[in-house]
Amino acid sequence: MRRIITTGAGAALVLALSVAIPSIASATTTTVVVTSTDLVTGVPSPGQFVVINQSGGHGGVGTVLGPATPPLGSGSLQLRVTAAADHWSVYNYDHFGTQLSNITALGYSTYTDNGTTDPILQIEINPGNATGTDGGVTYSTLNFEPYLQSAGVTPDAWQTWNVLSGRVWGTKLTGATEDAPLTWASFLATYPNATIKGGFGVNVGSGWSAMTGEADALTIGTAATTTTYIFEPGTTASLHVSTTSLPPGAVKTAYRATLAASGGNPPYKWSVSSGALPRGLHLKKSTGVISGRPTIGGTYAFTVKVVDKKIKTKHRPPTQNTATKTLLIAIS
Image 1: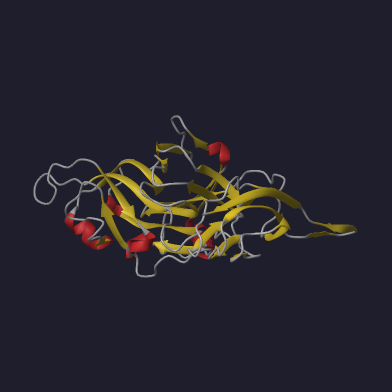
Image 2: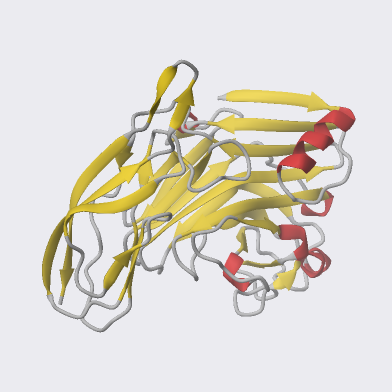
């Protein structure tokens, strides 16, 4: 893990130029670079994130290059689920004890392969009401879900979210349910003493369909300090196709899956190098999205090829990496 700390006006300028998450001037602005070695399963050190397999166990969490052009750096935090049983949380514990009313900056950026599910910004809190609305409740997970926001979820594109201007809801809370989320200001008015009592991070799954999503530029700040976590693979590994299997489909039913790669020098370009996709399906070269409506059943084997960005070096021929993988799609 590498930590970059700047202070004063220069620090505020670094954040402002990097990602459009509003904040007020802070005494200290810190950018923490989180690599794959900082994703742990035990007790995290400052700057690290613990990966929690809440249920299911399929899919997973890791750092990857891309996709496309992340808001900060060249990588992001990738989270995947394969079915409704899967549920993953990724938490940092550096902000334990922060009162929600003192937060002046809170946001992140996301990328997803579908138009509904997107990584959720999540905070474990004590709602803090002794009486009145949810009096006596001492634990809740506060959730900012992109699909509940007015902008909606756009697949295969980076979107930046300012939680302080959005809507949130909390588990175990009758005053701020998923069906009736509150604006940040209304949440603070309802739970004025709410305090972070655990993890701050992102979450995917629990009842979701298969999806792959990414998060980056995870930001939290108070009048004293603003911290932005950016996610990087750490080293530029050799290019390879990281997709291991594709979901089945059905004749005349809409199908969508996204191929994934890691390493090399993104952005990537995709093609089918041998075999063929099921009739009615098409591969988008720039995103790796396979979509359409299959017209004939059967099991189809084909080989996908991914190439990365061509790198030009003075006095040397351009270099470009290629990787392939044979995959199957079963259409019923």
